[in-house]
Amino acid sequence: MNKIGRSSSDTSELFFNDIRLPSSAILGGPEGLNRGFQFMMHDLGRERLVISVACACLLESMFEWTRTYVHERETFGKPLISNQQVRHTLAEVKTDAMIARTITDQLMEAQLKITKLFFP
Image (cartoon, rainbow, N blue to C red):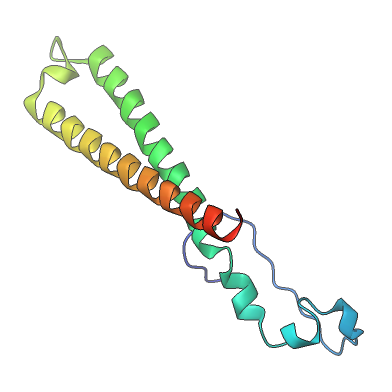
């Protein structure tokens, strides 16, 4: 199955052909019959925010793991961190991690404001 994004997640196709349901069993009632896309999109922003948090955390933890590794690993009799290119690359990754955390934090604050606005 061709998927966009997380190809490792478990996915299945379900087919409901010739199913008869009472109108009380339809999500959103009879008026919700043609609103499936709206139901799916309702929580999409929050779901993407959860993925953003996971990615920012993973980036930070991988940076910390790598920083520890380059301090412990030796090449040519010196720690790997003594290589200038390694230090520059680590600095770039740390900058990206800080940017990801900052943007994610701002998005979480905005989500909380929206949630409080609609659900006081």
